Image (cartoon, rainbow, N blue to C red; front, side, top):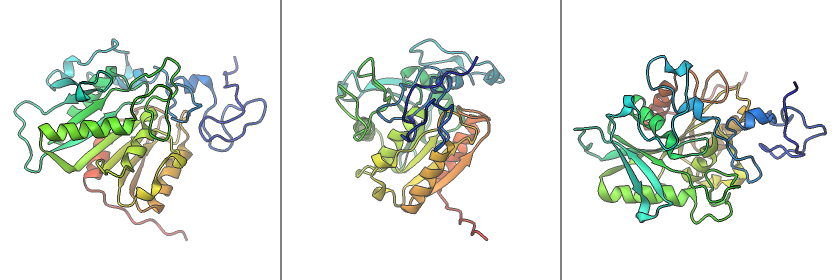
Length: 321
Protein backbone atom coordinates (compact mmCIF):
# COMPACT_ATOMS: atom_id res chain seq x y z
CA UNK A 1 0.00 0.00 0.00
CA UNK A 2 1.35 3.42 -0.96
CA UNK A 3 1.92 5.84 1.93
CA UNK A 4 -0.74 8.51 2.40
CA UNK A 5 0.38 12.05 1.75
CA UNK A 6 -1.20 15.37 2.64
CA UNK A 7 -3.65 16.81 0.15
CA UNK A 8 -2.10 20.24 -0.06
CA UNK A 9 -0.56 22.60 -2.60
CA UNK A 10 1.69 24.28 -0.02
CA UNK A 11 4.45 22.64 2.04
CA UNK A 12 3.54 22.87 5.77
CA UNK A 13 7.24 23.17 6.65
CA UNK A 14 8.62 25.87 4.33
CA UNK A 15 5.40 27.05 2.61
CA UNK A 16 6.77 26.33 -0.87
CA UNK A 17 4.32 25.60 -3.70
CA UNK A 18 3.92 21.90 -4.44
CA UNK A 19 3.18 20.13 -7.69
CA UNK A 20 0.31 17.73 -8.31
CA UNK A 21 0.13 14.97 -7.26
CA UNK A 22 1.63 15.88 -3.89
CA UNK A 23 5.12 14.32 -3.53
CA UNK A 24 6.18 12.30 -0.49
CA UNK A 25 8.64 14.99 0.53
CA UNK A 26 9.03 18.67 -0.28
CA UNK A 27 11.55 19.19 -3.11
CA UNK A 28 12.65 22.49 -1.56
CA UNK A 29 13.19 21.73 2.15
CA UNK A 30 13.07 17.93 2.22
CA UNK A 31 10.31 17.83 4.86
CA UNK A 32 8.06 14.78 4.87
CA UNK A 33 4.55 15.12 3.48
CA UNK A 34 3.50 11.65 4.57
CA UNK A 35 0.69 11.65 7.11
CA UNK A 36 2.23 8.86 9.18
CA UNK A 37 5.30 10.98 9.90
CA UNK A 38 3.41 14.19 10.57
CA UNK A 39 1.04 12.45 12.97
CA UNK A 40 4.02 11.07 14.85
CA UNK A 41 4.98 14.48 16.06
CA UNK A 42 5.77 17.09 13.44
CA UNK A 43 6.47 20.18 15.26
CA UNK A 44 5.92 23.15 13.23
CA UNK A 45 4.24 26.14 14.73
CA UNK A 46 3.12 27.69 11.46
CA UNK A 47 -0.61 28.41 11.69
CA UNK A 48 -1.62 26.05 8.89
CA UNK A 49 0.26 23.04 10.19
CA UNK A 50 -1.25 19.94 11.66
CA UNK A 51 -1.74 19.73 15.41
CA UNK A 52 0.98 17.64 16.92
CA UNK A 53 -0.38 14.25 17.71
CA UNK A 54 0.26 12.07 20.66
CA UNK A 55 2.60 9.83 18.72
CA UNK A 56 5.81 11.32 20.06
CA UNK A 57 4.95 10.29 23.60
CA UNK A 58 6.11 6.73 23.14
CA UNK A 59 9.51 8.05 22.13
CA UNK A 60 10.11 10.12 25.22
CA UNK A 61 7.91 9.49 28.15
CA UNK A 62 7.89 6.01 29.33
CA UNK A 63 10.86 4.72 28.47
CA UNK A 64 14.01 5.33 30.16
CA UNK A 65 12.46 4.34 33.48
CA UNK A 66 14.87 1.46 33.92
CA UNK A 67 18.03 0.13 32.26
CA UNK A 68 17.20 -1.42 28.93
CA UNK A 69 13.73 0.07 28.89
CA UNK A 70 14.51 2.25 25.86
CA UNK A 71 13.85 -0.68 23.57
CA UNK A 72 10.33 -1.26 24.92
CA UNK A 73 8.70 2.14 25.36
CA UNK A 74 5.18 2.32 26.73
CA UNK A 75 2.82 5.24 26.96
CA UNK A 76 2.13 6.30 30.58
CA UNK A 77 -1.26 7.07 32.02
CA UNK A 78 -2.63 10.48 31.12
CA UNK A 79 -1.67 13.03 33.73
CA UNK A 80 0.78 10.80 35.60
CA UNK A 81 3.41 13.05 37.21
CA UNK A 82 5.71 10.49 38.78
CA UNK A 83 7.41 7.14 38.29
CA UNK A 84 9.33 4.84 40.67
CA UNK A 85 12.76 5.67 39.25
CA UNK A 86 12.29 9.41 39.85
CA UNK A 87 10.17 9.33 43.01
CA UNK A 88 13.14 10.78 44.89
CA UNK A 89 12.91 14.01 42.90
CA UNK A 90 10.40 16.36 44.56
CA UNK A 91 7.76 18.00 42.37
CA UNK A 92 5.45 20.91 43.07
CA UNK A 93 2.27 21.35 41.01
CA UNK A 94 1.81 25.13 40.80
CA UNK A 95 -0.19 27.87 39.08
CA UNK A 96 1.19 31.25 38.13
CA UNK A 97 -0.75 33.99 39.89
CA UNK A 98 -3.35 31.40 40.95
CA UNK A 99 -4.50 31.24 37.31
CA UNK A 100 -5.73 27.70 36.60
CA UNK A 101 -4.66 27.99 32.97
CA UNK A 102 -1.09 28.90 33.92
CA UNK A 103 -0.08 25.55 35.35
CA UNK A 104 3.57 24.59 35.75
CA UNK A 105 5.54 21.85 37.48
CA UNK A 106 8.67 22.55 39.49
CA UNK A 107 11.20 19.74 39.98
CA UNK A 108 13.87 20.11 42.64
CA UNK A 109 15.83 20.94 44.54
CA UNK A 110 16.99 17.51 45.65
CA UNK A 111 16.65 16.59 49.29
CA UNK A 112 19.28 18.32 51.43
CA UNK A 113 20.61 20.23 48.39
CA UNK A 114 21.92 23.62 49.46
CA UNK A 115 21.31 26.79 47.52
CA UNK A 116 24.39 27.72 45.46
CA UNK A 117 26.21 30.90 46.43
CA UNK A 118 25.02 32.71 43.28
CA UNK A 119 21.60 31.12 43.39
CA UNK A 120 19.96 28.23 41.54
CA UNK A 121 20.18 27.90 37.81
CA UNK A 122 16.84 27.27 36.06
CA UNK A 123 16.13 24.96 33.16
CA UNK A 124 12.73 25.58 31.57
CA UNK A 125 11.67 22.38 29.80
CA UNK A 126 8.94 22.86 27.21
CA UNK A 127 8.05 19.39 25.94
CA UNK A 128 7.29 18.60 22.33
CA UNK A 129 4.21 16.70 21.23
CA UNK A 130 1.16 18.16 22.95
CA UNK A 131 3.22 19.75 25.75
CA UNK A 132 1.03 18.14 28.41
CA UNK A 133 1.75 17.47 32.09
CA UNK A 134 2.11 13.76 31.29
CA UNK A 135 5.65 14.44 30.10
CA UNK A 136 6.73 15.13 33.68
CA UNK A 137 8.26 11.69 34.45
CA UNK A 138 10.54 12.17 31.44
CA UNK A 139 11.30 15.74 32.53
CA UNK A 140 12.27 14.42 35.98
CA UNK A 141 14.56 11.88 34.33
CA UNK A 142 16.23 14.75 32.51
CA UNK A 143 16.68 16.50 35.86
CA UNK A 144 18.12 13.36 37.45
CA UNK A 145 20.34 12.17 34.62
CA UNK A 146 21.35 15.20 32.58
CA UNK A 147 21.05 18.47 34.51
CA UNK A 148 24.13 19.81 36.38
CA UNK A 149 23.95 20.32 40.13
CA UNK A 150 22.53 23.56 41.43
CA UNK A 151 19.61 23.74 39.00
CA UNK A 152 15.84 23.74 39.31
CA UNK A 153 13.73 22.41 36.44
CA UNK A 154 10.45 24.08 35.46
CA UNK A 155 7.93 22.51 33.11
CA UNK A 156 5.19 24.86 31.83
CA UNK A 157 2.07 22.95 30.76
CA UNK A 158 0.79 23.85 27.31
CA UNK A 159 -2.76 25.18 27.16
CA UNK A 160 -5.26 23.85 24.65
CA UNK A 161 -7.32 26.95 23.96
CA UNK A 162 -9.66 25.35 21.42
CA UNK A 163 -10.35 21.78 20.22
CA UNK A 164 -9.11 22.64 16.73
CA UNK A 165 -5.92 24.35 17.93
CA UNK A 166 -3.00 23.69 15.58
CA UNK A 167 -0.14 25.38 17.44
CA UNK A 168 0.86 23.76 20.72
CA UNK A 169 2.99 26.65 22.02
CA UNK A 170 1.51 29.87 20.53
CA UNK A 171 3.68 32.97 20.55
CA UNK A 172 3.28 36.70 20.08
CA UNK A 173 3.81 36.34 16.34
CA UNK A 174 2.08 32.99 15.94
CA UNK A 175 -1.21 33.16 17.80
CA UNK A 176 -4.26 30.90 18.03
CA UNK A 177 -7.92 31.71 18.53
CA UNK A 178 -9.12 32.22 22.08
CA UNK A 179 -5.67 32.50 23.66
CA UNK A 180 -5.37 34.79 26.69
CA UNK A 181 -1.58 34.89 26.92
CA UNK A 182 1.47 33.95 24.87
CA UNK A 183 4.08 31.33 25.68
CA UNK A 184 6.63 34.12 26.13
CA UNK A 185 4.48 35.88 28.74
CA UNK A 186 3.77 32.60 30.52
CA UNK A 187 7.40 31.50 30.82
CA UNK A 188 8.69 34.96 31.77
CA UNK A 189 6.00 35.17 34.44
CA UNK A 190 7.11 31.83 35.90
CA UNK A 191 10.74 32.94 36.01
CA UNK A 192 9.84 36.23 37.68
CA UNK A 193 7.63 34.49 40.24
CA UNK A 194 10.33 31.92 40.98
CA UNK A 195 12.86 34.69 41.59
CA UNK A 196 10.61 36.08 44.35
CA UNK A 197 10.79 32.87 46.41
CA UNK A 198 14.33 31.68 45.68
CA UNK A 199 17.67 33.15 44.79
CA UNK A 200 18.13 32.60 41.06
CA UNK A 201 21.37 32.90 39.12
CA UNK A 202 20.25 35.02 36.16
CA UNK A 203 23.26 33.92 34.12
CA UNK A 204 22.13 30.28 34.25
CA UNK A 205 18.57 30.42 32.94
CA UNK A 206 18.17 28.08 29.97
CA UNK A 207 15.41 26.43 27.98
CA UNK A 208 15.20 22.88 26.65
CA UNK A 209 12.73 22.34 23.82
CA UNK A 210 12.08 19.82 21.12
CA UNK A 211 9.67 19.32 18.28
CA UNK A 212 6.55 21.48 18.75
CA UNK A 213 8.13 23.75 21.36
CA UNK A 214 11.19 24.78 19.34
CA UNK A 215 9.66 27.86 17.66
CA UNK A 216 8.51 29.22 21.03
CA UNK A 217 12.00 28.66 22.46
CA UNK A 218 13.56 30.71 19.65
CA UNK A 219 11.01 33.47 20.31
CA UNK A 220 11.71 33.42 24.06
CA UNK A 221 15.45 33.65 23.53
CA UNK A 222 15.07 36.90 21.59
CA UNK A 223 12.83 38.80 24.01
CA UNK A 224 13.82 42.28 25.17
CA UNK A 225 13.73 41.20 28.82
CA UNK A 226 16.58 38.81 28.09
CA UNK A 227 15.65 36.40 30.89
CA UNK A 228 16.69 33.34 28.89
CA UNK A 229 20.45 33.18 28.46
CA UNK A 230 20.80 29.92 26.57
CA UNK A 231 18.64 27.58 24.49
CA UNK A 232 18.96 23.87 23.75
CA UNK A 233 16.64 23.22 20.81
CA UNK A 234 16.28 19.73 19.37
CA UNK A 235 14.56 18.25 16.29
CA UNK A 236 12.52 21.35 15.56
CA UNK A 237 11.71 23.89 12.87
CA UNK A 238 12.84 27.46 12.30
CA UNK A 239 10.68 30.36 11.10
CA UNK A 240 12.96 33.44 10.86
CA UNK A 241 10.10 35.66 9.68
CA UNK A 242 8.50 35.26 13.13
CA UNK A 243 11.62 36.26 15.08
CA UNK A 244 13.36 39.46 16.14
CA UNK A 245 16.74 38.25 14.90
CA UNK A 246 18.46 41.56 15.58
CA UNK A 247 18.33 40.61 19.27
CA UNK A 248 20.37 37.42 18.70
CA UNK A 249 23.80 38.96 19.33
CA UNK A 250 25.66 37.11 22.10
CA UNK A 251 22.73 34.74 22.82
CA UNK A 252 23.72 31.08 23.11
CA UNK A 253 22.13 28.17 21.21
CA UNK A 254 22.83 24.48 21.17
CA UNK A 255 20.94 23.05 18.18
CA UNK A 256 20.51 19.28 18.00
CA UNK A 257 19.05 17.54 14.94
CA UNK A 258 19.23 14.28 13.03
CA UNK A 259 20.07 14.35 9.31
CA UNK A 260 17.72 11.34 9.06
CA UNK A 261 14.73 13.30 10.40
CA UNK A 262 11.74 12.63 8.14
CA UNK A 263 9.42 14.86 10.16
CA UNK A 264 11.24 18.15 10.64
CA UNK A 265 13.62 19.14 7.83
CA UNK A 266 17.32 19.01 8.72
CA UNK A 267 17.77 22.02 6.42
CA UNK A 268 15.81 24.16 8.88
CA UNK A 269 18.26 23.36 11.68
CA UNK A 270 21.14 24.31 9.38
CA UNK A 271 19.34 27.52 8.47
CA UNK A 272 18.87 28.33 12.16
CA UNK A 273 22.56 27.74 12.82
CA UNK A 274 23.74 29.89 9.93
CA UNK A 275 21.21 32.69 10.42
CA UNK A 276 21.86 33.04 14.15
CA UNK A 277 25.63 33.01 13.67
CA UNK A 278 25.37 35.79 11.11
CA UNK A 279 23.41 37.79 13.69
CA UNK A 280 26.20 37.43 16.25
CA UNK A 281 24.82 34.54 18.34
CA UNK A 282 26.98 31.79 19.80
CA UNK A 283 25.84 28.55 18.20
CA UNK A 284 26.92 24.93 18.64
CA UNK A 285 25.47 22.35 16.24
CA UNK A 286 25.06 18.71 17.22
CA UNK A 287 23.78 15.80 15.14
CA UNK A 288 22.71 12.23 15.80
CA UNK A 289 21.54 9.23 13.79
CA UNK A 290 18.11 7.62 13.80
CA UNK A 291 15.67 10.30 12.71
CA UNK A 292 13.03 12.20 14.66
CA UNK A 293 12.84 11.56 18.40
CA UNK A 294 15.16 11.15 21.36
CA UNK A 295 17.57 8.50 20.08
CA UNK A 296 21.03 7.34 21.06
CA UNK A 297 21.65 8.29 24.69
CA UNK A 298 19.23 11.24 25.04
CA UNK A 299 20.39 12.17 28.53
CA UNK A 300 24.02 12.21 27.44
CA UNK A 301 23.16 14.51 24.55
CA UNK A 302 21.13 16.84 26.75
CA UNK A 303 23.92 16.91 29.34
CA UNK A 304 26.47 17.78 26.66
CA UNK A 305 24.28 20.60 25.39
CA UNK A 306 23.73 22.06 28.85
CA UNK A 307 27.43 21.88 29.67
CA UNK A 308 28.15 23.82 26.50
CA UNK A 309 25.56 26.45 27.39
CA UNK A 310 27.30 26.92 30.74
CA UNK A 311 30.51 27.75 28.87
CA UNK A 312 29.59 28.55 25.25
CA UNK A 313 32.95 28.55 23.54
CA UNK A 314 32.66 29.15 19.82
CA UNK A 315 34.86 26.98 17.64
CA UNK A 316 36.49 28.81 14.73
CA UNK A 317 34.88 27.88 11.44
CA UNK A 318 37.02 25.91 9.02
CA UNK A 319 38.05 27.94 6.00
CA UNK A 320 37.03 26.54 2.67
CA UNK A 321 39.97 25.62 0.44
